[in-house]
Length: 81
Image (spheres, one colour):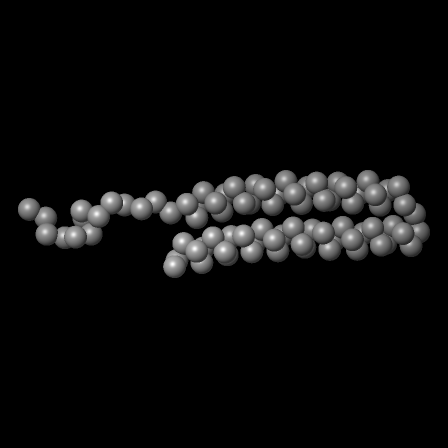
Protein backbone atom coordinates (compact mmCIF):
# COMPACT_ATOMS: atom_id res chain seq x y z
CA UNK A 1 0.00 0.00 0.00
CA UNK A 2 1.27 3.44 -0.88
CA UNK A 3 1.06 5.96 1.99
CA UNK A 4 2.43 8.88 -0.03
CA UNK A 5 -0.29 11.56 -0.37
CA UNK A 6 1.44 13.07 -3.39
CA UNK A 7 1.05 9.77 -5.26
CA UNK A 8 -2.75 9.87 -4.88
CA UNK A 9 -3.15 13.56 -5.74
CA UNK A 10 -4.33 14.27 -9.27
CA UNK A 11 -1.57 15.63 -11.43
CA UNK A 12 -2.17 19.18 -12.51
CA UNK A 13 -0.81 20.02 -15.91
CA UNK A 14 0.68 23.47 -16.28
CA UNK A 15 -0.66 25.44 -19.25
CA UNK A 16 2.36 27.76 -19.11
CA UNK A 17 4.37 25.69 -21.61
CA UNK A 18 1.51 25.71 -24.10
CA UNK A 19 0.90 29.38 -23.41
CA UNK A 20 4.56 30.13 -24.06
CA UNK A 21 4.53 28.43 -27.44
CA UNK A 22 1.31 30.11 -28.55
CA UNK A 23 2.47 33.51 -27.28
CA UNK A 24 5.78 33.12 -29.18
CA UNK A 25 3.89 32.36 -32.39
CA UNK A 26 1.49 35.27 -31.85
CA UNK A 27 4.40 37.62 -31.13
CA UNK A 28 6.21 36.49 -34.27
CA UNK A 29 3.11 37.06 -36.39
CA UNK A 30 2.46 40.50 -34.86
CA UNK A 31 6.08 41.57 -35.34
CA UNK A 32 5.96 40.39 -38.96
CA UNK A 33 2.82 42.44 -39.61
CA UNK A 34 4.32 45.51 -37.91
CA UNK A 35 7.57 45.13 -39.85
CA UNK A 36 5.92 44.75 -43.24
CA UNK A 37 3.51 47.59 -42.46
CA UNK A 38 6.41 49.82 -41.53
CA UNK A 39 8.30 48.82 -44.66
CA UNK A 40 5.33 49.67 -46.86
CA UNK A 41 4.72 52.99 -45.10
CA UNK A 42 8.44 53.81 -45.14
CA UNK A 43 8.68 52.97 -48.82
CA UNK A 44 5.81 55.30 -49.61
CA UNK A 45 7.48 58.17 -47.74
CA UNK A 46 10.79 59.82 -48.47
CA UNK A 47 13.05 62.14 -46.57
CA UNK A 48 12.28 63.06 -42.95
CA UNK A 49 8.85 61.35 -42.90
CA UNK A 50 10.60 58.08 -43.70
CA UNK A 51 12.68 58.44 -40.55
CA UNK A 52 9.53 59.13 -38.51
CA UNK A 53 7.91 55.99 -39.96
CA UNK A 54 11.03 54.02 -39.06
CA UNK A 55 10.93 55.25 -35.46
CA UNK A 56 7.19 54.54 -35.24
CA UNK A 57 7.76 51.01 -36.55
CA UNK A 58 10.49 50.37 -33.98
CA UNK A 59 8.26 51.75 -31.23
CA UNK A 60 5.36 49.54 -32.35
CA UNK A 61 7.63 46.47 -32.46
CA UNK A 62 8.85 47.14 -28.90
CA UNK A 63 5.25 47.66 -27.77
CA UNK A 64 4.18 44.33 -29.29
CA UNK A 65 7.10 42.54 -27.66
CA UNK A 66 6.53 44.11 -24.23
CA UNK A 67 2.78 43.43 -24.35
CA UNK A 68 3.35 39.75 -25.05
CA UNK A 69 6.02 39.44 -22.36
CA UNK A 70 3.59 41.08 -19.91
CA UNK A 71 0.91 38.54 -20.80
CA UNK A 72 3.34 35.68 -20.15
CA UNK A 73 4.49 37.12 -16.82
CA UNK A 74 0.90 37.73 -15.73
CA UNK A 75 -0.03 34.13 -16.54
CA UNK A 76 3.02 32.81 -14.70
CA UNK A 77 2.24 34.89 -11.59
CA UNK A 78 -1.42 33.85 -11.68
CA UNK A 79 -0.31 30.21 -11.94
CA UNK A 80 2.05 30.57 -8.97
CA UNK A 81 -0.56 32.04 -6.64
